[in-house]
Image (cartoon, rainbow, N blue to C red; front, side, top):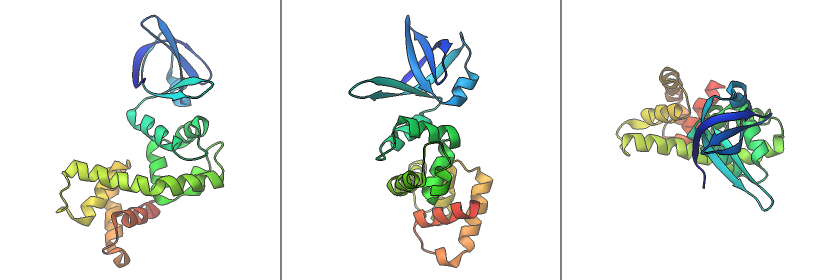
Length: 199
């Protein structure tokens, strides 16, 4: 129902902003980083996720569509509610969470408040392959599905889609390329190997 909002901040709460729009004040839960930068009377733009339950409705706002999409994806995991998804995003940020999922780094995810090792493992199992596929699909969209670029370019594009700078992506590709055991491996396997090198 709600997807985006821009308006004036009426007041700031501990974990939410009340944003004025057309004479209505909407309470929107946000990440701590947004609270830290918010000032009463200031303008704000938020990408929204509308949570609907039997007993309540809630708006959650993010600075980018990317954050909102990852929040929605995390909610798909059994046992992950809004509080845990927000804790993950607040602690690690969207790019680092995606890398951890592709790499299978349960220990890293478990460092977020409210995320134990068992839940972190479930998140990796349910989303790891999906994140790797999404990274590959983002590359395919950017090249129009052209596979003539070769495996190394595919891997570099997937790394860039996960937030790595171009130069660092190239260095990781060179390292993976030098490993003979990865010749002919799938993009997912090569991506995981690159992320292990980064760790």
